Amino acid sequence: MEFVYNLLVVLHFIGLASLLGGFIVQMKSPDKGVNPAMLHGALTQLVTGVLLVGIASAGLVPGEEVDHAKIAVKLVIVLIITALAFVGRKRPLPQTGIWGAIGVLTLANIVIAVFWN
Ligand code: HEM
Image (cartoon, rainbow, N blue to C red; front, side, top):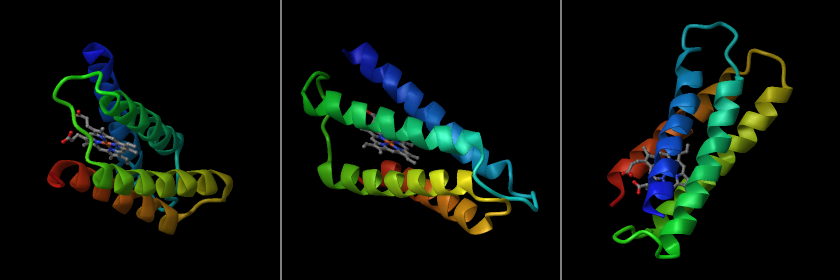
């Protein structure tokens, strides 16, 4: 099960790259908005994150413990990101506000993931 867990961690980083990359690549664009990379990255973070927590909570990987408060905050943030991404996909460009909010919330989740111990 450790292999599956580590594979999910890799996918968690790919989702992060897609979400943040989709945001950064539009930095100079006049038509900022939610692109497919951002939407799929958000969904990847949600799915892989929940699976990681499920496996760790079940005690299937020795040494992996779950900080429930940290996970709850990350989960709420990713749900807001995902909702914004779906709303953004349906709206005409530019959606600078939605694009910026997703970027800030993504960075917040990275900081929380790394600094909240
Ligand atoms: C935008 C959304 C997210 C971002 C940017 C993000 C970012 C990260 C980063 C950078 C790490 C590695 C840092 C570390 O392990 O110290 C990490 C690990 C982790 N994340 Fe997320 N995350 C997101 C969403 C979620 C969600 C929604 C969950 C759970 C519901 C989650 C659960 C986890 C878990 C369990 C780990 C630990 C993996 C390990 O054992 O190293 N993440 N996340």
